[in-house]
Length: 495
Image (cartoon, rainbow, N blue to C red; front, top):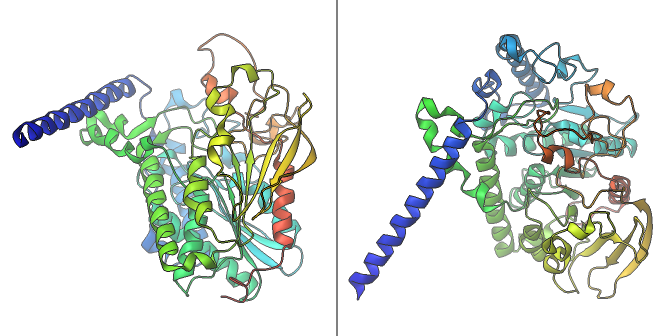
């Protein structure tokens, strides 16, 4: 009997290995048929590693960052092939999309300081394949409220997509710590400190807050604000590394990429290396372990309040993980979770998947809960006007208040990439000014033309996915309330 069981297990293991090999082979064949690698895929800029970052101050980081951008210009921009010198290529110096021609290159780390002495500081952390550009709206809010806003360019980002083929999640955590050190240097030991993270930056912000509970040498934040945080990722990202195995052979170098796409976005990579997905997965695993340790040790009781904004439908991160892995273990410390429902009154509402329509019922546990929840959803009347349905921590009865905001015509939901961007954002805004494209060479949000399949260099998903957020004013207002809120005893007075 035991011999039969072992034989069956061996057969199943062999079957699994065969299936993996087949999937890898099919994917390798498919990507080999796609676009060839360009210099921005093959030349890896010499960005800072974790050990180097730990020894630097802010000025040293900026000097190293300048050297990286100089290298990108010398080794990539000045070496692209003649056929790549086209308007749609951000690495072509003559392109309207070339970041070096803009008044401000938002791929770089930046600081927004208030007019007078800062009342506090916020460290802003962008997402994977992203750049500090996505932090502009929140940085401006904090600056206008008297805070100094520090948005750091995480290693591997803002330069060339090849940078993510070598970046490690430890590089990003060390960069986060460096930015916090600079924030504390600017405001002194007593002023409030906030962390704000978007997507992968949300994981970094949460990880830092947990690390600071265990390490007295780290400045503890008073509040954490998360936008579409990467608390959990899909199973594909967890095992993405195996798809790069064929790249061991030079002829299959393309296998290290999940996608090779024209680089038409001046502030975000379009091509995506497998290592980027793998490092995000490793970071979330580290984060899950840190949460477990904080709960087991009791340190979680000193966690600062967290305000999170999340769409109930998100193709990139797990909304359920935010609830089950993070909010389920938070103390009653004033934290809040804001969820944006799908637009049930949209023209395309009849085409929404059942899983999208019942997402809210699956995501949230029944009240009472240790944290406040706010669901932004359609009102009872068949219009685009939305309401906030809130349930306070410890309560069971919701309260409803109307918001003077509407879902735009034709928008059936938000998306992972939309949340930090205003509707009139010059790059991503759906309602950007007619001449908005002049600032950054293109307005990707308002692209809605119709034509023949295959005529454009972008696919349909890139055009239909929501790229800006009609509810950003609400988010900024809620973040402003967090800025004005009294400091918590868990963090006040700590270095």
